[in-house]
Image (cartoon, rainbow over all chains, first blue to last red; front, side, top):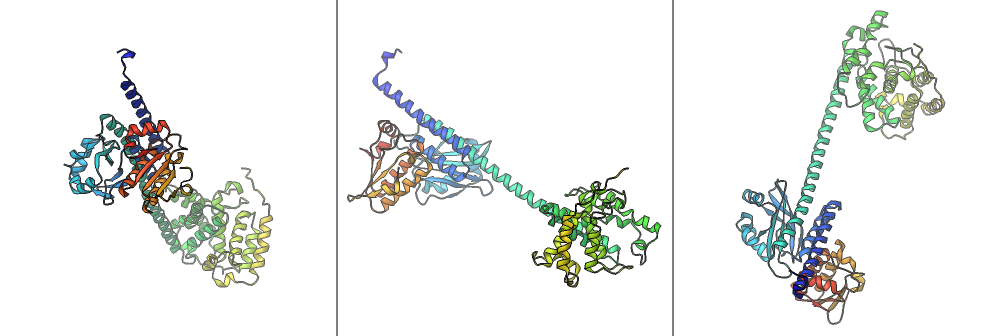
Length: 433
Length: 104
């Protein structure tokens, strides 16, 4: 055909087709952008419906998502439907089977009437002048449906219109599938969080039960491991550690003496100062504790190290390895102070509990020798904040008793000790092995 | 619509004028539709949509206009499009929108 053979009508039709193409492809491009960039799913669906209806000037329509749990279509966006149009449509197995068999292609309402759910909602569909129904099938899974009314021209849908609808419905289907996937991921993540929380609680309960079992072996120091756990927790908290780290410090305290389960009861319960041989036997408990705890996959790091090194001193005079200051794991330094404090503040068979002023003085004097100054300082701060009422929770009072915590002059004593330990630039011991 | 709420009003002949502008082509253009519905409920029997400041109309705009036409039709009111650019008239013609409105 030569160019001069074109009639005016042909030119007009070509121009109209081009105009139509530009308009529908513009809608398609905007839809692609909307489904990938809009953070609000409801807005995405409303916009998608506008673009679909506006691209072909369809008078009314709706987009629904499919719930495979409830076997129902839930309307996400609706335009121009009659007021009695149901917002939730129940489907049966046969409907789902037909959707999957049809795939993502528009079905004439007159043909869709054989579907069971169409027979139920026939009246509502008729009053809304529906013409087309498009199941949204993505990766062989029904994710929703699109309902469409008449075109503004009043003319039937052409094959070109159906192709456009098909392409746009695919975009909408993918957006719904992505949203479903995100919801499923969130649900699973939430489930995992709950499972982890249950595991954490079970672990902590087991640790506490273990601590109670360790303490049962020593009738004079009943509750020692639990108290060391609590003091370690307070110190870690005063040092500004995270909740998880504070919990880890508490666990390290609860389990620090686990090695004692292999030490003979008569040595642990000896109502006298034990001799060198017995002492050597008792001093094996840090290493044994480490060996017991090491194979366990703890949610907190350093729990076995705290058991192994909680009798080490900054000046290298501790055991089992005689480590110096920086060689000692920090958690072991915390447990060391908590352990010593509990030993000083509880009655022993050969020694009465010591008064608070003596204990504070002892910790202060040994700061930088046995204890790390920053840990002593954090510990004093914890007691100070409680006795001055700055900290509402009475943790020390619960562990030590009211009498101990209300000793006259305790506040200025702690204030001075705090200033002292804060200004101490502690000596660093280095091993020359 | 440039200033939908301030520029819209019911004239003595129960005619309401709304200005489209480029606002029509966004999701926020639904506000125009709500405004028109409100005017129809107040008894307006002729809705005039003014396109004097509307460069072009996209698919969202078409959808919103169809919503306005549908609402007006349900209330038995007339819809008039005024000051429409030739290109937009051609689009409305092609899509069949002009079957439902008067173009001034």
